[in-house]
Image (cartoon, rainbow, N blue to C red; front, side, top):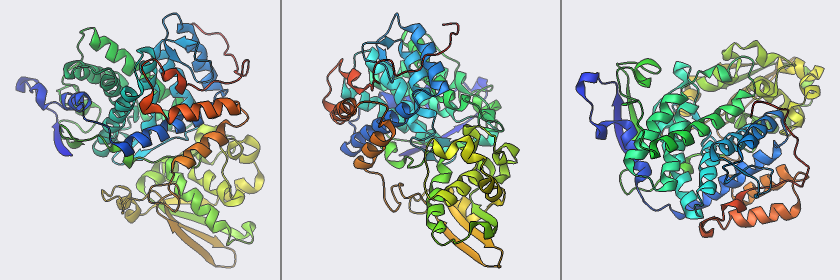
Length: 499
């Protein structure tokens, strides 16, 4: 990996194309380096993971709405929609919209955290949609996904968006565009223009994840994928984009991020170096914000030592800056303590999550968020006794470069009426690569079978799992086998819109 300095340059300096970050990102995408075997295996795992959470959410309102809009664009198709038979196709940017929303709805797929946040599995829906529409083969798809993960994760390692209240899809859209560029074997010049266009149109504010969180949290990454596909299409037709998008006088760095004096060091693979970033990401065992994963596992462990939950007077979670200020009491969001809050808001309240995990000893993607569960009197009482605080050591470990030091958990102190205290800590979730039980292929398959059981047939489940594990061998035109269909008439239909 090589570090690249990125900063604002005045227009009169005429910054050379080869010195621009977007050109370097395009160079990584255009590099035809082989995808290594373990990376290929992990890509298959993440395709399974995406399908798991997409099917589990298939009839939830945002997915129904997104699917309804997508079905209005079926005249020029080729890309499939989760839940529908492969014979029913739509335009790829609308498949990315519907499938990307389904993948993100439960907030239950993979994650990478560093200078900023990301769910790099959001790269898969748009790249897969274009692959299906353009009759690509399995190896093409693998190469495209490897690029999407690499670009997004490398940007997330270096450039903080949330500090400037920008949503993390600003790093996702250029990665998706680059991944599509790799998939289609486009030249560096074309990918360069597509990446710049994708960056330009994808900067939005973090209000989507603040206060009363709405379903846009699920739509936002899908919207990025739709924009990315349109950016690539535009560039393939010979059109340019605002340039230099990162370094210009009126660029995103100059006015949306650190400003004219900011310097970012972005790590990127050298020419000929394999794209391995996906191996640094991790998936979720529990359907909740990633910073809660280790704390849910810790709650399961601590509850075994508690005889009377009514005797608890206070719980303090000592954790990282991110956990405290984004999903903890440091966010100063009253909605995070509200029993009538939306599922999306409860998913971003570690106080609620820890209380339920402590009481139940289990976590379920539906039951744990049900209104009757959130409004249970003893849960509300316990929930409101929980507070978070930043611990500088946990913040340091959150940002550590050494993977053995990196941590996303915290230390919990539970105080009781008799004056006693129960204290325990956990650095990484059990499912993390350094956790007590790292997720392996059988865990991804079990997650798929658990989340899709009772929704799809056993035959369809077996067919998909067989096909996806044969991904490197799938010939051109066979990527429809990666679609997962429900039985006829099992999908909820959307109310009418414009499309």
